[in-house]
Image (cartoon, rainbow, N blue to C red; front, side):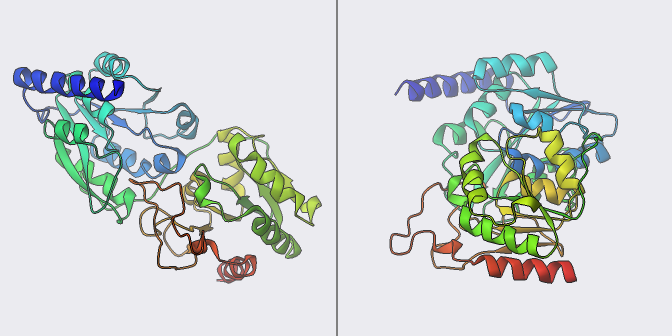
Length: 362
């Protein structure tokens, strides 16, 4: 109730300010640009084509990215970004940050009411935000839609390739491109990685997890083929990785680095590997950005929206009637198939291994 009252107050404030300043659609010289992406690792990697496209069209502009703390390290060594500001939450705090920057335009990648309202109240001349179409999105609230009328909106179609949909936000400033190639950088280090396959058995959304025992069996099959396996993840993935390690046979060839590496070190490790296999987690998009072949065990995820695409990338799942049920703009965290829970993950380690062999032989 308290949040609802606060949102009503913010919406009223925005519309009263609209009577004074008008709509945030003023086309002025583009010198300073803010991109706001508050989502997790994978979504931020999928936003990197925007950064390159902006710099290609406006090479002399200053590009500032606002996002969460973990993505600051993810984007380090990216030449298309001039600065990164870590932000947690709070409309007034964000208003102050944006006012201090004085941008010519703010591009908001997700339908988040507080981000849109803060940008408008910060008196930014031009604001572009997504109008989500084609499905249910829990963030596409009435408060958000009311404020969307005060800015430039660009449609973001669900069940379509999300990195391409993000690029639509650039059209009001004359940037039209279909180039969705991701880009990341990392600093050099002494980590020695040879003949390696990286496996990520867990994900932030636990609905996306294929199973620790299955990953253990897959790792053993890969090791038996002469490869070294690195198992990666963050602190929240630890118990799933520990369970996987309890079930492996080739311990000498499987190195558990879960929660032991910085994001920069993870980027370096993945960039030097030969292959990446995992759940649909942010780390698989890091592999894609470094042009490492991948297999994405997608389960409930819509394979058309975000998973890596192209000849060096494959997705695998059991195509049951209830999938896909989890989308970029509408994340599902519960399986509703009561007759056969998580049937979309009924894929054997042998099937994944067979696909892996086919890919490395081509």
